[in-house]
Image 1: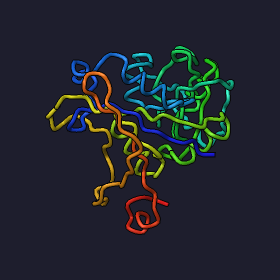
Image 2 (image 1 turned 180 degrees about the vertical axis):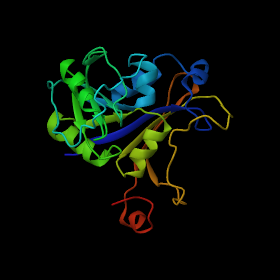
Image 3 (image 1 turned 60 degrees about the vertical axis):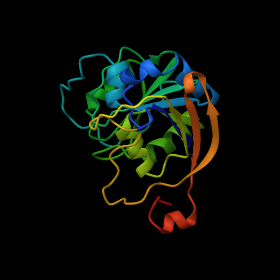
Image 4 (image 1 turned 90 degrees about the vertical axis):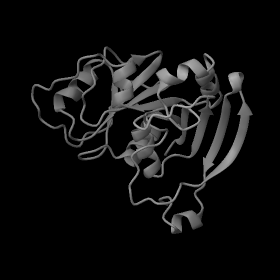
Length: 238
């Protein structure tokens, strides 16, 4: 039931993803225009990205402070398109279950407070509880496919959640807009961050397409190469 997962991102030539810095060297609307060609029926981001751009400013504060524990998937309603938030401890506050026309699904761990899930239900927000102390991404994406019918999921997060999906062997394709600019700062997030220090080999990719876009931007599409040889070498999980 796992959806096909495409990581769709914009980066500088040196792989940095600070949107504010890249805005001066990227043509308006390119990210959205290329993203629409991928025909995703859902997109997913981590807590930091959602907090910056979509959630309410003040975090949720639990009254009960009682962990929810294992819970069944709550489907507020089915929709044509979904916005998915990965929020391990249930910190993000939402005004409702609609995010720019996409139905909101929150993915949390069993450590999320019981009254946080109550709040989501009251606001008509769907949720998936997967993992004891951290979100089990493999289980979560399987449930997103099973209960919501999601077939193509666009991963549009920061470097760490992208890295977590890659580490879990869940990324099927990389769609990368490389804009004509160099960031150069050492403390800025890259497209993928936070992979295990034990991983000494690059994850192998196969070029799917290359397109020159407006303003000297390159649109690269790569498939993740899950060959048996790569699995044997420990580059990717099976």
